[in-house]
Image (cartoon, rainbow, N blue to C red):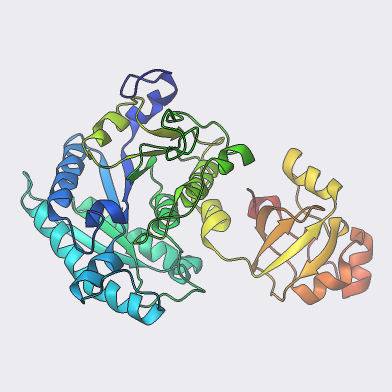
Amino acid sequence: MKASGEPAPERSGLRKTRRLVVKVGTNLVTGGGLHVDRRYIVRLAGAVSALWAQKREVIVVTSGAIGAGAGRLGYLEKPATMPERQACAAAGQVMLMKAFGRAFRHMRPSRAVGQMLLTRDGLEVRQRFLNARNTLEALLARGAVPVINENDTVSVEEIKFGDNDTLSALVAVLAEADLLVILSDVDGLMDAPPHENPKAQVIHTVPEITPEIMALAGGSGTRLGTGGMVSKLEAAKVVRTSGIPMVIASGRDPSLLSAIVEGRRVGTYFPPKGERLAARKRWLAFTAKPRGMLHVDAGAREALIKRHKSLLPSGITRVDGRFDSADLVALAGPDGQVFARGLTNYDSDELEKIRGKKTAQVAKELGALLFEEVVHRDNLVIL
């Protein structure tokens, strides 16, 4: 295995990166403690500013508000209850933004920062998704660095992203980024648990995220963070399917960002899966929340995946949930695994009447043939 930092032909496309999302983990911005590591944020700002000097737009997704706020409010460790965590986030967010603002203000040239706090329900509605994207575009057009975090002060279990790895992937989709870099306190995905095998090495390229790769991810995050390698691989699934590459690398030395965009062998690289999805289909695939699920037979699944067909009533075997026409639904095969999402032309009551039926029978059941397709291929995304 070649040493990290050497040119990697498989990463040559990263040199064309013009917009990237950089996610920094809790342990990096808090120094592993209950405070904001201002010196680290200054180093990060320097690395990000160097990319801006290369005419690369950088969006920062940061964790650490709860950890930093816990120390400010006198906790000895990350609190367990949701209200306490929300209180810590409220205090910590102020500290984080003050540190980021000061760090970028003292760069040369000085650069403004813009705070964005997001929740999942703020992106599920198409208009809100577009509003958030427009805000990002306006900040970037003015040369400001967007600094994004989850809005922990209002998030509850039903709407929170769960970890900022997931958030960073959705921000990359939102921003139509060319690259997502997740900076962590590890060097990348290892080929064995490093605490068990001191000879464990970084896997430099992961062409496919297989069950074997997921098994290498191990456990969850630290006592302060909520993520772990599993959540990073889930983030990789999102961006790869959207046509966006991703790199997991050590953030201890933020200057490695320059090596990453130069296509050097740093950390673990996840190449994009196929061509980039259109913006609307990226929203359908990963940001909007399905209102129900359609189970389809093997023939329908094959027609959708391999022959790029629309979903007809005859291929549906079961309808789960209650939803209206034009709502987003998930599609699952005979094994129960979700393989696609799409906008339905029929509501759940109508689909209960026509599922499994041929097109000629649909008009008889409903009194008229409203649509031949339940989900048209233009409104369908294969995951």
